[in-house]
Image 1 (cartoon, rainbow, N blue to C red):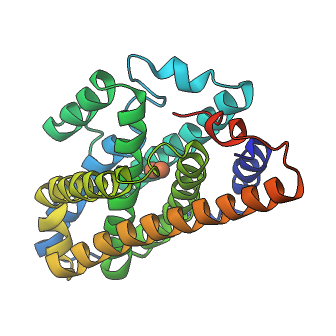
Image 2: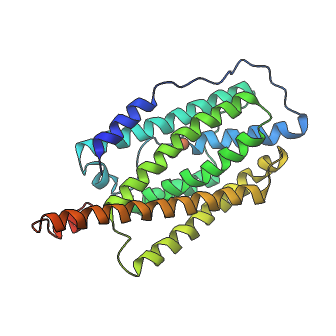
Image 3: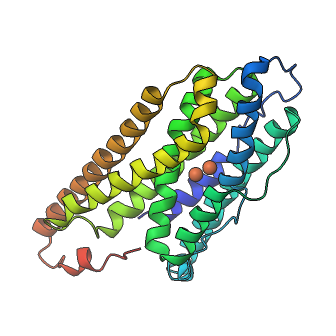
Length: 264
Ligand SMILES: [Fe+2]
Ligand SMILES: [Fe+2]
């Protein structure tokens, strides 16, 4: 994985960020206002409002794999904290409150902490994918323009986070040996749909109230999961081709070049 490329990406992504017009007048119907605000209040906690770091018991193993990786993780979580700030502005604009606990967030943190950093990274990736589906539906139907503008900013960042995970997984190559391919894909999709369902339980009422639907949201989820898996395998295939080409050109390029790659 090209660490320097990711550090440069995150540093560049801090630029040209147009702040939503939080001072614009609010005109949301009474029917949707309560559910809309409740959903944004909860999302502020889940999207960067909690611990802004990896919290698995063995997280240091991943963070300290290289000095550059530590920097990338810090930059990634700084963007998550920025999402909480943006969502906090939306909550304030709508006269809501900053909530600090919710059963789904407690369960989310417990899984991250207890099951090890490899699992935590997968949970965070799946959260980015299902949150992308949420923000896309929210933006499409938002009754409030500044909230739609906020979704655009967050979606831009989440696309970068997902691409980082794709690079990281393609690099580790830990899920791509023979039959383990299908097994990995299956568990990835099952956990992804479980995360999506949990999100829908909490935020479906809001998305429905503003004009979205369960079908629209789950279509987005499936599209995000499918696109991630297809692009991951394309990236791995491309890297394999590059490797065999290098090996043909130089027989001393040994197997260690593949198996020696770091796993998460
Ligand atoms: Fe986020
Ligand atoms: Fe993210």
